[in-house]
Amino acid sequence: TDVVSAYASWSQSVVPNSITAIDATGTNSFPPGKGLQYEGGAKVQTANHEFFMTLAGYYIDRTNVLVATTTTVTVPGPFFGKAIFRLDGAQHSEGLEWESQWQPYKWWQMSAGVALGKAFVAESDANPHSVGEDLIAAPRGSGNFWTRYNVPGGPLKGLGIGTGVIYVGKTWS
Image (cartoon, rainbow, N blue to C red; front, side):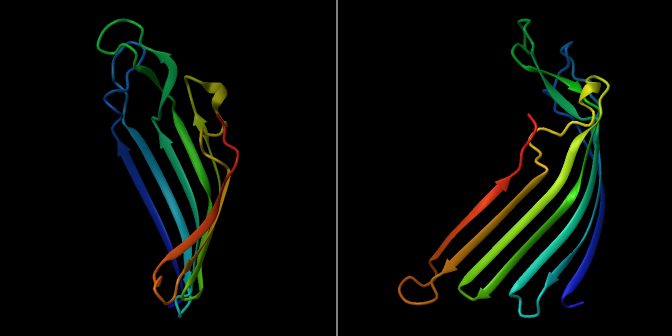
């Protein structure tokens, strides 16, 4: 409709792993990383364009994920000091995201958003005790709020002053 629209997407990816990623033997024979993503949601915009909102849900699976170990190559040679990588199997992420923007007056804007999700190790032959653990730097919850005032007239017309806050929930490390 003129106010609400729904959307859905599906995608697959294949990404060659980095040529600088080496295993404990100093070779790079890792298979490419693969991904699968589904997303769906709705977008709302009022007829006067003063309010906009999106709500989306997503589901992502990644396989052949490389992880840097805490070990580096200690034998002198071209790879000396470089991190050793291991193939870590699969990762999974799913969640919901909400975002809105509101302009109650031509000179005042506000926006807010919330994301709730879970990203975790889904499979790992090399590190099986990590299965089910949250991914590093992937919070379960985050949010933001921003507001901006634009001077509507006079010599400072067009000058904008804004402020906001960002919340990032606890992450695993």
